[in-house]
Length: 394
Ligand code: BGC
Image (cartoon, rainbow, N blue to C red; front, side):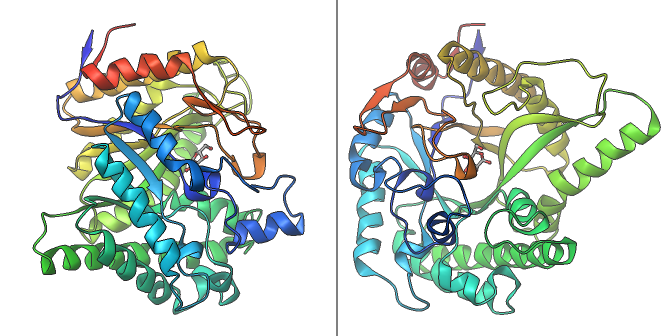
């Protein structure tokens, strides 16, 4: 049996564009309409209309925390013009969570940006940070009394990799120089957001907020133990996993370490042991979560697993995935890593970016014809863990 702390945060995560539907003012939508991608988010899961229902499910599944993102392009569809109706919508969304005693974990940027923001140069414009901060001031000003946990930017390195280095996601600014300028811009956006959030809480006499990013961590595995393989794994780890976090930690701009863990990556092209895969062919490697957690020790900060999940058509595999990752999480905690929570990605099946609706990550199945939700068996098993803070099944 694996016991977790009584005050642990248990739950799941979603993100606006992947579930809400009709986020017509953001860069992804624009590309989807233009046919840049094979798939369109369209109504997505109709979560914008059905959020109460979805939160009822989260409650019934004993989640005490839920991570969601506020869609910047909805609340500020034109530069400087905030849409009161949309702000009111998110007020109701957060109220709906509070009424159910579910802790809201709020992400401010989850891959999508307003079309106007990209037209003005995106994260490469000198004023980009200032534009983002106007949105931050507005949102945090409204929600500070109801929200304690903030996530500034979701997976900055994934965003830079696909949106800048490879240029296949918006804003399609391919190349290493674009990537580096976006990197520093996002670092600065985070640090300034961190300061604004703390200032607003102080001004309003509120308990200290907890602010972080959601860093995607990948376990880079050198199967051959020779120098080039090890060095390559070390470099990737240093740049992809640690560079962003280190840049923020230097400025003391992290209250906890928000991490998303999904998979490992082999350094060598061949000769490595085959492991189980998800439906997108990513390696499943629960031990990697443990290895990554140990690496984070040096930051001396509590860790919050903001995403961990699997897309699969085999729900038994989903439960095995959750249980195995929780076992390794527990092992790291036994060895002195402080972890404050675990969120499964995702509460419901959703729009998996350029992969469309095919990959099924949800604890809850979505029927995209009727928008009906059907709770999967794995969700009930996880609900037992959420309720008891105990994992019994091996
Ligand atoms: C992202 C999610 C995405 C999930 C599965 C994370 O990289 O934050 O938006 O759906 O992984 O790919």
